[in-house]
Image (cartoon, chains in turn brown, blue):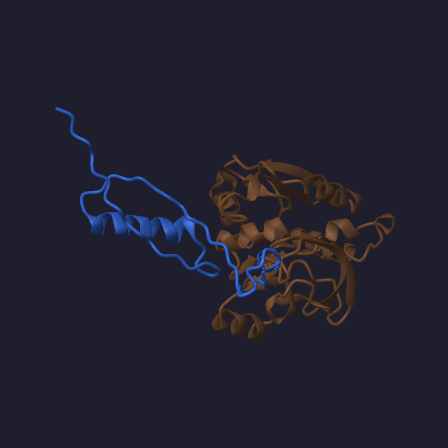
Length: 227
Length: 68
């Protein structure tokens, strides 16, 4: 059965078609979910892609969390459905309370657009299930607010529960503990700043992101394992 | 953040510069305490992210002008 990935589109989102194309290239079907939708339909997984949802007014992700579709995404996540937030999508998931912590301006106060090396830290998440812990992936980042921060207690839990899924090999933005991506307790909700969909074809300079996207599709095809 | 432009103007005793956000609201409330409680709630729910932002609330009473 073909897996269907719902890709959330807020006003100001700009990476949705990159995600759709990458998913279709891997044999999945993908459908856009408008921010005003009250349901995620018959999707097997949801991706909240990058961009500037609602113009990033007030704070990144601050307005987007109140879009009707986010109630549906939260309910889908609570039922164990795989949800991945990429870049601005990660910021939206933290504002929505689906993931702990927040993303503040990069140390150095510069917008960063470059390919970075990520070390896979665990396979216990819907985005890293097929990845080999310890392996290094080359994936682009493209953000101003990617500097992950949380309080000491949250950091302790993230580490103890194996919820830091990818770390920067050479920290570009000041993120606490070199964190590039994290998962919730169940491992079915993931957020990361790098863009795996932009590393999904050798033509793009790297196809190291494919293992992450394939992990998501595998998890979406086996909902019982992610619940 | 290190200041560069201010020293270039000759203010070479400036070592720290930061910028903050101001959000002004006009609201009807029965008392100062009620207004403060409501604005605090707004800050928690939307206006500030307590993980990365600190905020203070200042209230000023707006007096309606009475024309005879």
